[in-house]
Length: 344
Ligand SMILES: *Cc1c(COP(=O)(O)O)cnc(C)c1O
Image (cartoon, rainbow, N blue to C red; front, side, top):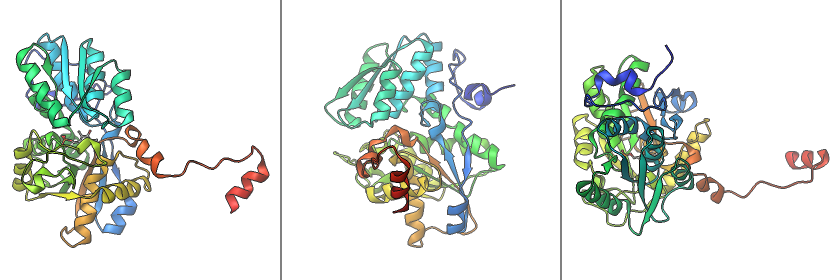
């Protein structure tokens, strides 16, 4: 039978209510891409779980298929979320698929163009908040307590259920859990989901390296960050909704949560692209953390099997690339000019 999406494939492992009515865009089933060059350089076996290949270009689709399926099943007509961008695009797409109205709140001017475009294209009502993601999330929580509008942020437990499937897929592909799992941490729903997924699936447990951006690293600093700043907009979060669970996952797994600078994130984005995997800046954080730790001898990579989660596609945030490079050369449409340009 052809692939029918995550609820069909892994529903038996997901704690979803009986009223759940599956709404799917055939999310999940993303590739675990071997990285031979990086593996050789580091002396380990490195794979990228490329979540940018989900239907709306990020891992958010895993949780959204579950959250929207549950909301539809209980008769919700409107869904709402706060978003740094990818949740908005995903909520909008799944709501469209289900015939629901979707409203998304984003921090003004801080959402990458590819994500905003997605949310609009799928028909969401997009509202910019003069504040941060954290302010937007507070408003969403309040409105869903006072009205029948359904909340689809990752404080919705069904989002976490759906996102566990990535851990299941990794175990199914490798035959067991890897030694290490490295991933970016923003609102901390994903790290929470992976840890829950690995524990439940019983194919072994990885150590977890969670990576925040230095300008938005509440879990490393040990306190909320009032004005988070980073080029990695998807993890520009100062008050993670699931911060405690993230710390628990790091601790229980004998791993840790660290921070990397924007420069490290952007240089790792180029490293990944140089091996054929273009990801958005936040998605480079996991590998960035691994490289930084191993460079200072804090991470024994030798002989280990390591999975790095790349959470979203590079096409989500193209301006990061186009702004930092000169625009391509322009030449006359003739052969002599072409040869001249190539050979000099
Ligand atoms: C949402 C998101 C993250 C952060 O995930 P959390 O569950 O909020 O920790 C990281 N990268 C991308 C591309 C995202 O969309």
